[in-house]
Amino acid sequence: MKIEDIVTVRVGKNLSRGNRKNDLSLVAYSYEDLTNDLDGSFLDSQASSYRGNSNLKDSYLSSPGDVVFSFVSSKAGIVSDLNQGKIINQNFAKLIIEHDKLDRGYLCYALNESYSMKKQMAISMQGSNVPKLSPAILKELEIKLPCIEKQRNIGKAYFFFRKRQALAKKQVELEEQLYLEVLKRLDQQ
Image 1 (cartoon, rainbow, N blue to C red):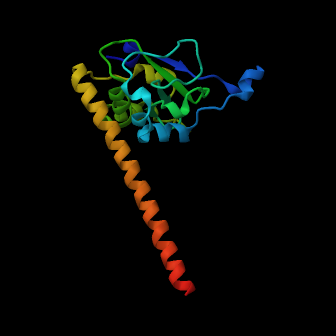
Image 2 (cartoon, helix red, strand yellow):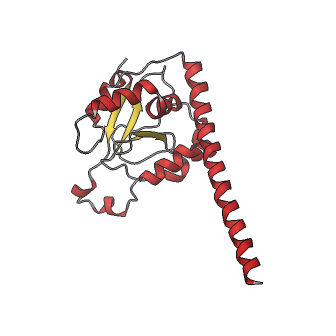
Image 3 (spheres, one colour):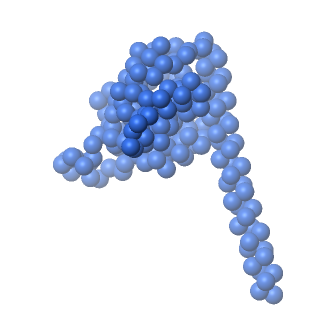
């Protein structure tokens, strides 16, 4: 099944053409925001229990629970409460799930980690000077859909794993700071 059969790909707003004063006061959703959301911020948000589709089809603003995709990094994540109300720019797209047999956590897992998806993306981007996935290529990707219960389990496990990885990385950074501070104090004595 093609992505476009079950998902509407809503490309973000081109901010360089924005003349509205409203757009200038908004903060843009960034790659760092995506990384934070992908690393488990979503699990801590109230949106983690979200089951429906909160995407407004005519809105460029992020809402908790939205699935966003970066065309630059070819990564997908779920918007957390922390990134609510940020404007989605043209480097991102909202993936609006139109099919009740697709779990958003599984969609992120499939786009980010599936061997089949990565292979399709690599083949589609061959010959490009700047390897960047286009909306047209994204829509044409084939996705395999296991039963919804299996998707939910895979999606939930994927985000818990990502959160665990992020916490382990943070622990290593904090330990490094602690050890360096202890060594600094020992050296000053």
